[in-house]
Amino acid sequence: MNGLYYQVVNEIRTQYRDVRYIILTLLLPLIVYLLADTINRASYISLGNKWQIYLLVAMTSLGLMSTAIGEFSIRISTERSKGWTKMVRLTPLPRSHYLIAKLLSQVSLWIITVIVLFLVASVFLHIYLLPITWIQLAIWLILASSSFITWGFLIGMLGSATQPVATLTLLALAVIGGLIQPINGLPIFISQSFPTFLILDNGLRIVEGLPFKWIDVIPLVIYSLITGGIAIMLDKRKKD
Image (cartoon, rainbow, N blue to C red; front, side):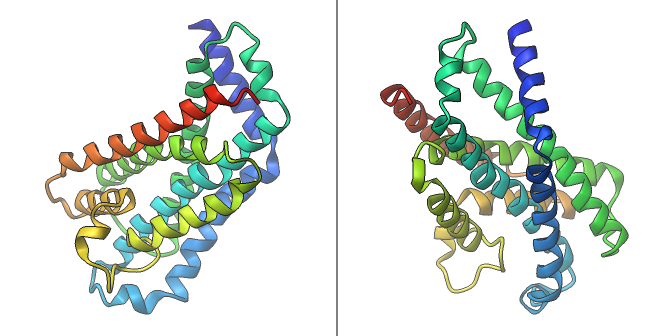
């Protein structure tokens, strides 16, 4: 456990030492949120009185997912190209500790991202929710978004193809899952099979006080196990 603790501390220090990465990670979701609230407002207004809540949940989900699949996969790719993961493998540190430390350091950044977005939504966009609702929504979005960490690991092993594959994956998940704009023109069963839709749907249920659909957690776990399993196979086959 001491080894895991020190590895977590090291990952957090390394992550926050890169100021440009932190600023970009925090600013990008905020900019996208504010742009969607102005440029693409007409698409959301069609939802009625709940459009601001929909936008809040969708943009927060998109922000957390983009760091897991986008920035995180690039970090993994960079570390592999520099031989860092090979150095880690030569130490007594279990591979599981290395992966858990990565996840926990990412969660710490997600917490800050959620706080920033929620403060902007409350102070500047005048979205008012009960404190317990803010907390429940934050917990759900962070826990659900952690399922994308395995996606980031998998895409990060693609070398020079990491960035384009991450971008295309993000775009597909965001568009088909209803994050960029309300689902329109696609068969509903296709959208409902995407993890982004499941996260968005339960997020809206939390805000509206509707029963939580625990069954939606199962597909998120399955997606995570599949991508994580493939990533582990690739990691064992390619020794950097």
